[in-house]
Structure formats: structure tokens, C-alpha cells
Amino acid sequence: MREKVLKWAQDTYGTLPESLWAKTPEDVVLRHESNKKWYAILMKVRRSALGLDSDETVDIIDVKCDTLQIDLLSQQQGFFHGYHMNKNHWLTILLDGTVPLEVVCGLIEQSFEMTAPKLKKHK
Image (cartoon, rainbow, N blue to C red; front, side, top):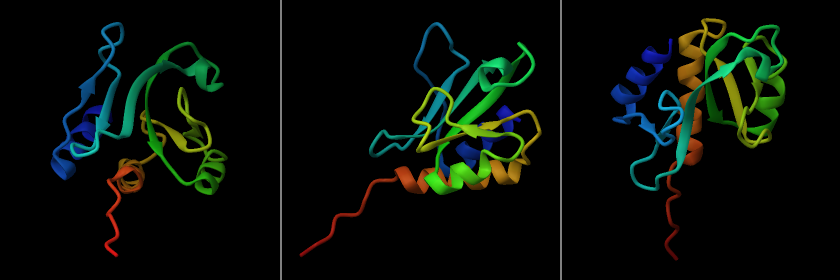
């Protein structure tokens, strides 16, 4: 699913994944071209880091999200408070098929909008 998400982001926003850490090149961020803010980060983590019963690695994506929505979604399978990000503003989603691609893409869209450059108001 990781590759499908990356292809969707490229097709939708023209975003190419950016690897920031030499130690973990598979961990990539998706960011706005104009303001350089991240709207998603894809990582490989151990399932146990998410409180799951396994040390196998799994792909995840973190997206910016409304606090109330994070609280609601994190009660469902495949969703967690942000891993390695601000847990009040970022949502972690398993990319193992637990959450349908359409739902993941919808949350990426929301994150993209939340992190987009703000329009300046003219007086």
C-alpha cells in the first residue's frame, strides 16, 4: 500500500517523497512545495512500538488531523495517536491493508489542506 499512497500523492499534488535521514532512507516525508511544511510522513516501525503484539515491521503514515477526529479514529483498528509526532495533532495509520486506501487518501487530503499556506487577508 505504501507505493500506492506515494503514487497517489505524486499524481494528486505532484509531490515526490523526500528522504531526510541517511540511517533510515525508507522513511520519507511529503511536503508542500511552497511553504515546505510536511503534510505526511511514511515510516517503517516495529508493530510493538504502536502497542501491537509483534516485533515485525510495518509501514505507517502520519498525517495532520483535527484533535477530536484523532481521538475518535484512534479507537478504531489501524489508527493511533501520532507515532513520533505531536500526538494531539498527528494521526498514525497502518498501511498494511487494515485501513482502506480511499480512507488513507482522504485523510492525506485533509492533512494537505491543514498544512497548506494560509491566504493573506487584504485590508
